[in-house]
Image (cartoon, rainbow, N blue to C red; front, side, top):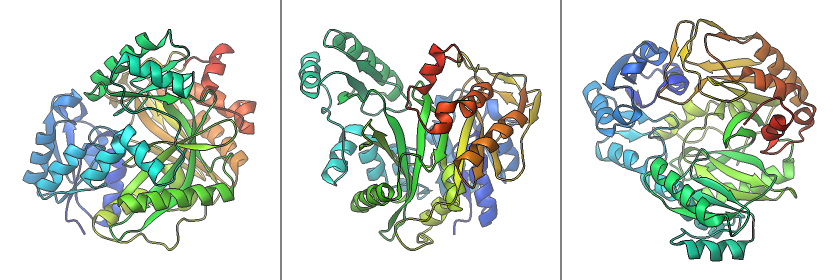
Length: 450
């Protein structure tokens, strides 16, 4: 087992990793920017190192500073959390070259699955259904030809993208040139490469993802699916497990296909296969996230498996701790991402939290690094807490989430809680009748805006 782990992240995920390490008896090192000097992950780690100014490029994305912090504190491994450097094959390679264990997949696997075009091609070879699409687009003329072949509407996507950046929906050939340039410019600004491709656009999709674990002994397992369809601006707002759209036969069949494919590429650590479901319930491979997900707690709640602990144990050489391809899912779990945003406009709301009261009780979990008098800085992601509930079935989980949201008090900044309360009370949501445009329908009804 590792003698010391450095967490190359901040906020609630850094605190989440510290909790897992404490339960495993592993000392931790926190790194922090000047803006996070008073953060809880700094307080609860065994050691803490300031790695730079508030701007991410000067701190949490500064590879040299993070490696130096690991070396001077004697850390043996680095957990990247999610975001920042979590899916950087370069960072994983630097860790390897510095004799530090990167708690995640190998650099070559991160590189393969991080390139959406290569990942789609490889998963198609390995038996997963993939939406019709192009290779990397090299010219406007090629884009027009490929869109005509695929059939409108299409979506232009950044090859190295994520989080909705570098994406544009195109309804006609007349729109394509302008939207292609816009997507390329946004991709270059967000991911340092303008590479984009064209893919068939599903008008009313659902977003389904499968959680996986792979160990260093050649085993891969899946832990069922999560429903991540409730989104605004391609950012997830509510997640749940299991999905109302996936039955036991589909879960077993698709899960097996994913396990076989990931065994073939030698996948290790936690990861997530993201899929789109069309109106006929066909599932298509979308992309893979080669890291722990923000929404991993819903899977933990229905499997009773600590995913972060297992990431660490797998990186240390331990086998997956159960037999078979999957585990039985028990009950139903829902997560609401509580963000520092205006609930109607979704404009960021940085500032000081004056009152912070977490809900509690049976089946309620809060993952957060926020507290009364803490400051939400304007430099990073707006996520301030994750509210997770578990119930014996979906109806109980919805009722439990509704009362937990009502009892979650955050003052001094705006949050997404009001819109999430409306989602829980919505008859279509309660019936499982929604797609990725659900919040847009709210907007048309004058209740919210995405």
